[in-house]
Length: 94
View 1 (cartoon, helix red, strand yellow):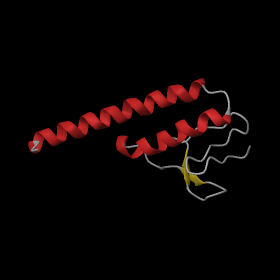
View 2: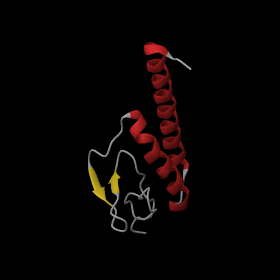
View 3: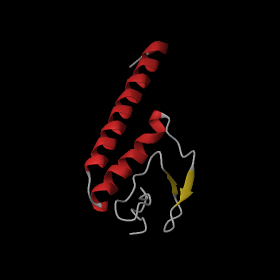
């Protein structure tokens, strides 16, 4: 299938818009969550979508457990300890 020069660009823009909408929807989902367990999966999904919408690990730290990067722009905060939940292993300080 041939998309042509502008067809590919349009397809990529549509995918980015879809990823951005999903990222925003996950933000709303995390705001409704009340437990750490409810936040782990949305955090993982946000981390997977982040590269497609231009969100990166600009200001990062690393997980104490698995040493993967953690970014406040991507990961969600645990309601118990207020640290960010690692999207790789699910750890925080709770």
